[in-house]
View 1 (cartoon, rainbow, N blue to C red):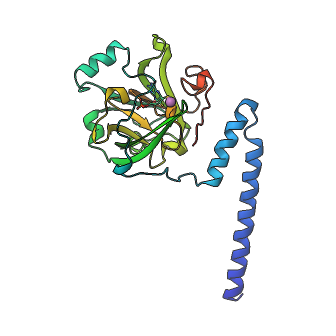
View 2: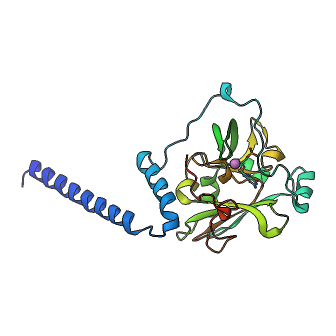
View 3: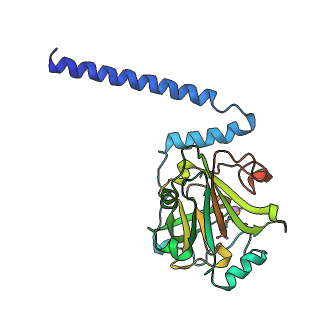
Length: 254
Ligand SMILES: Nc1nc2c(c(=O)[nH]1)N[C@H]1C(S)=C(S)[C@@H](COP(=O)(O)O)O[C@H]1N2
Ligand SMILES: [Mo]
């Protein structure tokens, strides 16, 4: 067989393979997500990921664009004795626990996190309540923490647990979750600084999540622990977050 013919056949084979893959993908898209309640937001998520690549970056701004003050929303100071005791000591005794479906559970101090690779980004925060603000966030890429913890292959979501009780009870503490696509997104960081200064308590000290392609309520403040899970059905109200349990969409893409 001539080299040209071999190349021709190889190209046909590649095209056929591509067609089979595309067929599978279409099949999985139709079969995969039947629950009626979830179908609308699942569609939003898939459409966003079709029109923009899965790892597309949220827009980043310059220091000239910074909001004069980054307002606080939701909890501004957790009403939790353990948290207040930690805050009093400048979070020197605070640790972030990383567990669940990982090979190596971690317990990271603020100093441990500050010694890890960092990323600084100026982004716009959009709250469903109708306000936006531009802030500069510095923190550890979540991907770096997950690499340290060695995520097991069954893990499908990252759950973030916060210090603030929303209704005065332990069970009502704020929590959130994201999938592995957002977990490994380069702009998904665990932020310990806002506008070049340690994160203020009003904005989630000592550590808060930034997941820049979603709405503000996904960005859990006052982080205490991170858990890798296969499903969040048994956590809280089962919908993946404090506000999700009260009707907000789990995927809040913008
Ligand atoms: N732990 C916790 N995280 C939270 C909230 C909260 O009340 N508690 N509010 C959410 C909402 S609705 C928004 S808009 C942002 C507000 O972040 P900010 O206080 O830094 O403005 O945090 C989100 N993360
Ligand atoms: Mo919000």
